[in-house]
Length: 131
Image (cartoon, rainbow, N blue to C red):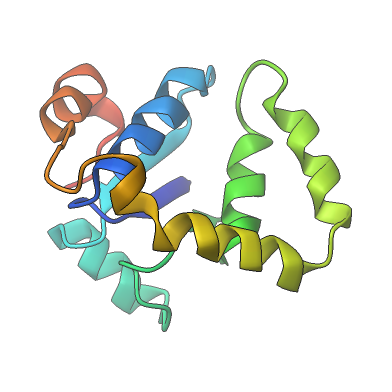
């Protein structure tokens, strides 16, 4: 099972998850907010030490990907040209993560902190949202 764990209180993260679900043609990626009961359960089960509010988490075949590695692994699963982003796998991880951290640090400025699309997420993709 492929699961994205994200910061459910972050509008940027919510929009990103909506984008993932829309572009995932196989409908085999599931999502849950890090503060949901399922999110908390998975964080404990997989012994995740990264603060889930600070990073995107992607679970695949019992492996945990985070930060830029999670984003690239997810991109590989999307329709369109997004799998081509895997070319960035050639960039050293510390550089990819540095760029990821800059975006993450400013994510509340990119999209208003209070805005949320959880209702749209729950209604349109209810079969892929884990609670």
